[in-house]
Length: 602
Image (cartoon, rainbow, N blue to C red; front, side, top):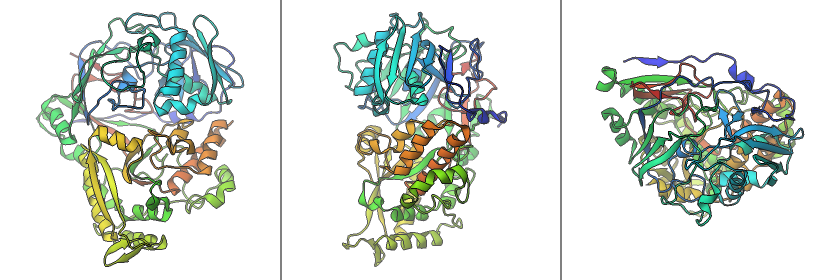
């Protein structure tokens, strides 16, 4: 078999961390968080899109789980994850070859006040919904107000920092910000725009499949069967086909999302040809399971796609709302008992590296050893509140690779005893004499997570802790995690090369009790709040980078998550008729790449 490997050009990420550009004081085709947009006003297409890509064909993707809603903008319901990005559009679109740069999409221009106190968007005259009706300023205002008050929690926090929204012209809307925050001004450009008239006599907050939102996107929902598949069809009358940001993108006629009960069923569907593309997260499976007949005869190709984005955090997250995990020593014990080297060898053949911090694999990652320079200065006011490792450097334990992991188990037991627990006749007990037990909540379908959990449970039994693994379907999983009804669960949070306001949603104090929030660990720490504030107000590259590195130190030393491995590359298998450009964006295989810039060669 032949595997395609793609090498990125060097030095691109450095562009992300250039000094902040002069304040924008006039309408522009795009806006960058740091520096100026890489593409000039007369750009013809995104660098990682093929403007000559042919239209037609289909791509069939697989997902494990189910769905019961097609509206990804509300709290209720389980929605196919890619739907939010493929079937909805915003005023500006994000280039994934730059850390945080936005270009005009529904909006022809964007203008930001010199003091970042307001932002204006001027709509394109040709912007239209899929039913042919024009996109109006009234639609924009309704979308912002509705999402900001009744929408998914991802929209609520930013809206509380908006002072007002108003029409200031036939096609221009101004959003006044309560805070002078240049990133917040940019985030406003990424809100999906929906048709106000569709919801005049309907309850926007109700989940379900009967009222599919009318949108402006290149794709419309053509067919679906609850829990089984969703078919998106390219709109032949799409309004934005000649917009530079869209040229060469979204050219495949049908995107079909098939749903499966577990990963094995999905893999078999790909092997047999039912689905046409598959991402493989296991290095061991990639090495062992991709020499089947369709690969051998050339029907399926394999590719390894590099990227320069942070590792983010993936692993078992501990719910600190549970008194057991409110003690950092217990959380550290859980990390000590997790035999990463043995698990990684068993699951991945030892190929994939461990996540060592939230921003590892990127220029934003904390540096090893003691905090120095601006990082140390930023953390100094919080020294009394920081856990061991934040200032002097936190390093994850390394086992000898054997299954027993004796050193890790001894360390875990010692930490538990330090936290007030004791082993009696092989059972870890609390001060009240009750056995220490907890539950790991998993969503059905991931054989890899199941395997990791099984090995971990066996290790914890040697600490004297009885752990139950509960597997539920996607709807039940969403219901339970939305109200934080779990002790420990699988957790994955992707992070970007331009972290900012979204950090408040991930681990900010205001989201600890917000139902449906992404702060599953229940993080609330003054240093986290301060580092996010410092990032958002940084006036230089050095201060911004130092604030992110300081945040990284606080997060990893808080020991909220038992980290797994990460993939510095993406491994994709796909039917040979599927094609993509040679130029790979810095984010690699990420949102906005597959199927967005792929095409089909009949």
